[in-house]
Image (tube, rainbow, N blue to C red; front, side, top):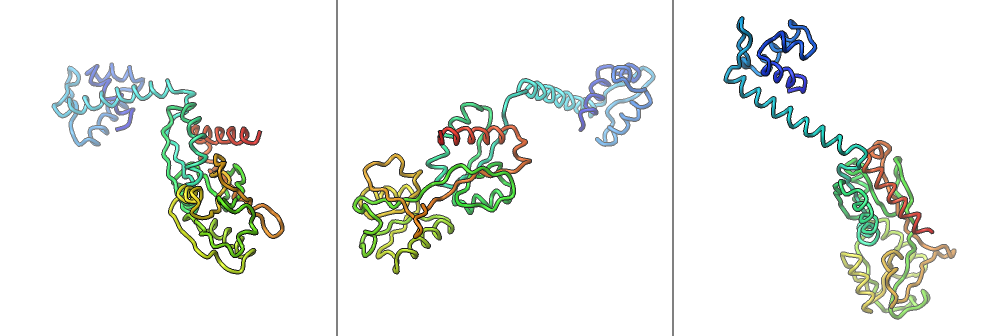
Length: 292
């Protein structure tokens, strides 16, 4: 039932007089009479009984009027809430984040965001960058935080470049990898990350690591390396807080540092939403602070 229909029914029920109701609604009496006929036809019920004395509610009409009053009351309450929230950022923000970023980078950003915009509800999903990219392409999320170099035609912001390091308790130089019998601890990741590491290894060595241990989480991989079980190749962002281990930057044969870029993705239409724009600005703010 449209809001205009609600108003028509409530005024008619209050006045029980077609002429007086028409005056209150600023319409002609014939137009109001025809509108009532249309409303009753839509309900399939007689709402008012007409007589020379005016209008009288039918039993069905009483129920319909009660419903109309409830609708009108809820509408006025909602309008009041929306008016009170003018200038306030609220709504739902849906973010798809690469797991590494969700663990090591997002908490700081999200803490600032929820403190500044407490009325926004955040829905978050984490996983491989390839999965998060699929979510963004399917337009299921407002913001995507993706590792690598995503092919994205919408709005994008480069957050930072994460250098890759070999971490180990014993080795202090990459040359020590040759003929080394220590286990390579590898965490499950998307294909692009694995491919970068594989290409780097093949460029330097003729054979694969003697032993490879594959774990499901990057934090497990990190802890195993910290406990001397073997060596790992990890992004700098995951080991900044670690001191008691050797961190050797990876470089190509040309001496170029190996890095893993991180991007924030959205679309022009999504950024028209206040909560999405607010998060984008918070990330930009935090990113600039990190550079300074």
